[in-house]
Length: 445
Image (cartoon, rainbow, N blue to C red; front, side, top):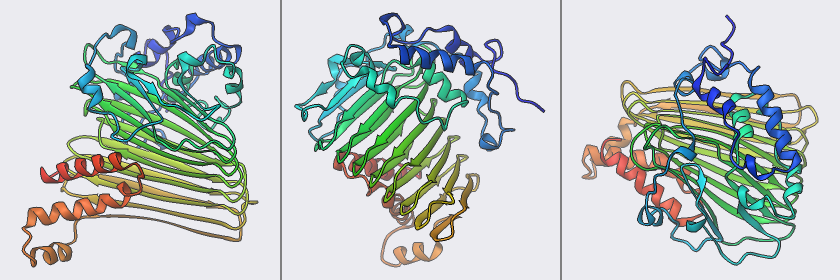
């Protein structure tokens, strides 16, 4: 049976995207940017809408997103107030804090400290007149892994807000960069398309904290695309925290391109959203690369958290590491599909992938599918998955030392999550997430 085509009449989500001109359209976009929009709009009308009949979506029901009638952020004028925003700022001094409310850049609440010469940290609306705007064509849309994916194409046709981070050759941004996206979930279901571009030149270094928070109740969608380009011998740490409203939808496409001797560490934390989908693709275009894609999903109620990753070893002498953990309670559901490609020329590759899942209820559900596709001979690769509950022996050990059963369960659950949380090098983020996990376990998760 063929899938339904995504005509406007059949799917409100796509229909609205086709009808809207997109942010900044009236401000004279550069030719390359306008061409990207036109190409994506052309592809959208011929793409099959994913359903649970599609292999990549077979464990969840994307129709809940496609059939929702969203509204433009331009139609929502809700201000959460300075106090709410200030409570979400990082405790550390930041090189920059970019704040977004309901998908729109809030320049008044954003700030940039003194940056090394040549470093650019700005919203897309601020780079339209920048002398480097045409150089962005070298990066935006050049990794085509998600081409013909309807969420990616809608974002490409619609984006006008999100962070542009350019760190040129040899520059080190010592303080973290904080990207804060707050959605109120009020006055209608907002549909936003943040696009974040992170470019680290040769031997550059930076740390990015990308955070999505929900305020209040109500459905909305953040449809995110991140494009990360890590130059030769550059070092990028990228921590993404998703704590949306439990009525929200969150879809993310993360594209990472890694050059010679590059180092990239990513930790993605999923705590919120009714339905979240986080897809990452790492492409190796050099040798001696180290890439880490770690993650933690902690869900309860009827939440669904779906994570797909692909790491593409195309050249020799590189490494990849992946630890993805999930904690599932009530009737919640997690999905993990991790793919490791080792191409024929990628000799001397080392790759480690592990998915560990902890189920705390009789009705919690986990689907896991780690995959290896190896065409080279001289490799060391491993992958695996575990699904289980708290071990009776560990509970008995703690109880025998005077800890009651509830506390023992909380301690073991937190210890399970802590292995991923502790990889985050920004102290306030690490501590906030630890507090969130403890709070969840204290209420039985």
